[in-house]
Image (cartoon, rainbow, N blue to C red):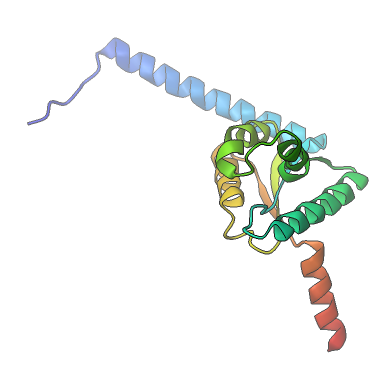
Length: 162
């Protein structure tokens, strides 16, 4: 038979106090994120990257760079983990897998005001994009989805044929 733990009245008050303090910190964090959003804080731009075909990874890299450039041109402050770390990984002979970059990307998400997912081919299956989305949810960040240029161009071409 397992024993149940009943905290002393003093311990129960301390636990309640800690829970209240955590709730206050979370509310303050949410308020600061709202202020950051209003001031155009950093946007985390997620996209799939890894693929068995190196040409696909390179195409994804070029596409996210075009999108990040467009967002910056229109006044957004963008952190694109693929744009920022792909050249570093190549020059530094570093792994490209999510497992290597997870702690780095988590830290960057922690200073961003929202996550924008670029919906390139493979975004729904991407280990990195799915993990980044889960971390953003855990942090209470808003998540937006953006059709990539190649997807929009294909849709426009199909529409023109009608």
